[in-house]
Image (cartoon, rainbow, N blue to C red; front, side, top):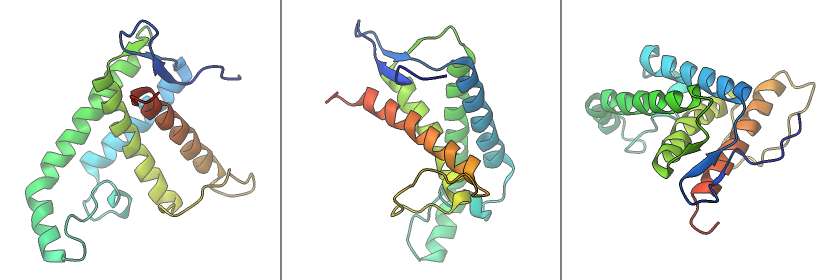
Length: 164
């Protein structure tokens, strides 16, 4: 299937942001968000997959980071899980073709959580100039998924941009 429209674009009537996600795309995004929700609620804070979701607040100061984590971790997890639940609700309604800017901002936060976990698994750092996936790479499917999620996220950010 060839996509002719961006996943998100400002509604021509100025009444929100149009959502152009098919049922398969919505299902995939909901599944991925569910996996991140499960990671958030069942994974140890020390699990390397969680490093980018909860970066150290105080650089190399392990004592200050431990105290920050002790005080804030539950609140941060609760916030991320609630955001995922909100996004899952609008993705579940395939008849829903517009969202508010606030809903799309929450979508970008939730989708970015998926990308952060996937980027950790792929060992992508901020300095990487991402190349398209190589077919014989054992992580080609994960890399393609990362690119797909990046494209959707880029579309959401563009739709939210006042300079558009």
